[in-house]
Length: 441
Image 1: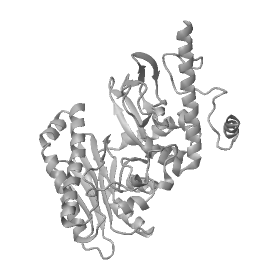
Image 2: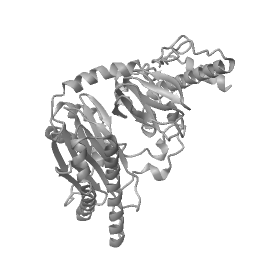
Image 3: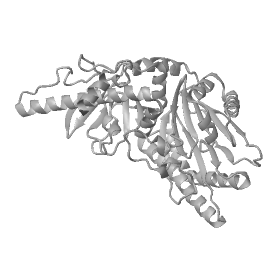
Image 4: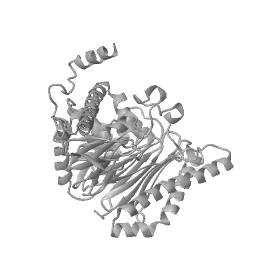
């Protein structure tokens, strides 16, 4: 997994652009792949992107010793420092570009997508309206959110979105910048794509998944650009693709096994195959070793977790509450605006998770109302089940009987498991809606 990826980049300028405000860059010593673009066209736009990328490279070069140390002996603490260094490199680039633009008396907004290639994983930094995607066999994951929903498309149940936040953050607009960073494990045969704003806005997820899964990087870049132009994409188009070397048999087997696991999750009951792929697209894969912590009680949290493989323990106020096995979901309160984690979750074995951020979750619901009804109803059923179990346990503690929920093993809480009073929502059955109306009345 230490081998360098196979890469290919393609930039097509908009009519009249000379040169295009898009730049791709690789640095084999750092393991850096980058795609940058500027809203301003022509020479000024290109110069602004080069300035930002040069600043990022200079800052990362200060951490070359740490990068080499990590490649020789990966460690969690060192990975965290490198991820912070990548985010800090982008923030410093934004400060330099902001000063440069003020001196020139102009406005230069630059978007950057960066990959720092490490043994078996990538560190991702994203600012702007472009997109970063991971394709594993025929399963796609969006590693960066890209353009945020506009005011009329604000995620359901969320009050944190404002009109100012509806536009993507860009380097150089302000002295301070919000940088989206994430660490993702990569497997042999995986494809990673950095797409410019116009490409990401025009190409559907299904098209990206198909092209990257079936073609080599050079063919896929040509296909993406051609498809975007055919669909009316304006402006300069850029795609930078990388393929992890090696046999993809493990990834193929993993994907074939993943969808049935998702389908059995109570949260995803009644979802079609395409809807499961939509859910997987907004989820980031994550693996943790036995004993590692998923999150800590009292800390802020905004992610929902789908447990694909392994087992975790749930502890609150020092008391063991439950154990969850494959097919379980946890962290639901983060979806309902709970500011702090109510429990600590640790891995009891090597585990595999799909992590869905709150913003991505609500954007998914807004884009597919049928899926929204299914997910929200099943989420409410699951949360009410947790509340019922907690009430039963508290009642048992008060009475001294130690009673537990009769539907659950009190020590191992497996995916439920639905009884007659808690069945998943059938999209053709309006009974849940009728029940909700009665409650309102």
